[in-house]
Length: 212
Picture 1 (cartoon, rainbow, N blue to C red):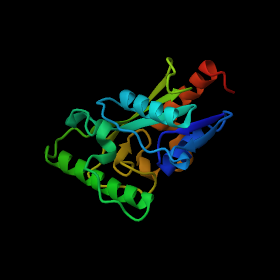
Picture 2 (tube, rainbow, N blue to C red):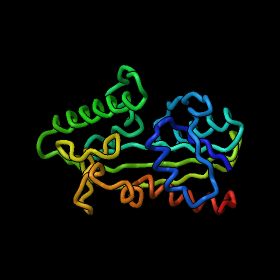
Picture 3 (cartoon, rainbow, N blue to C red):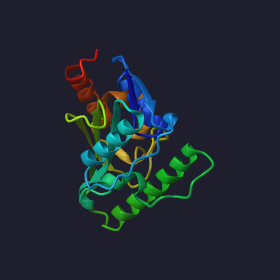
Picture 4 (cartoon, one colour):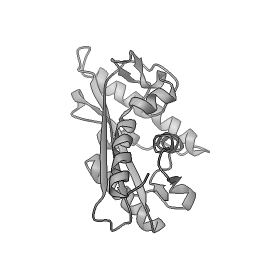
């Protein structure tokens, strides 16, 4: 079964493909089908994920899945939240998509550090990564499958590690003693917010769509 991922993020595709590997699914990005990105006007992860999944499902005429995720920092009232991907505002496009993403990540991380530094040395740096997955059999599916994963940590005052993407170099996981960017891909795929949501989604796909 083909499942269209409503994202153009190559690393996100790689992560989800590994996490869904046990299911009879062909996961493809919407970009590979010429589907443009959807608007994300909502205030919550679940509303944006549903909007993206519905947009991709309508454009491809079949099943789609969307991931809306981000980091929520306690001291900032849950920000960056749903605007995590463009917290610093959209950067100028680079020659390649991945280059643009790297520039955007750097700008977002810099803004998050500035916001926390402005709160003073005693600021609460507790945060969590949140991932919401929504899967639809079609654009008009009345029964969307919804899975949510949360990964608790804290924001460091400086980046550590070179792996992952987004806020991974800033998110320290106390139980592991490392930032997310310092984890091996296999370990991250086992314990991350996306891994938690994907594990839930695998069960939902088996039960609701009778896959596997």
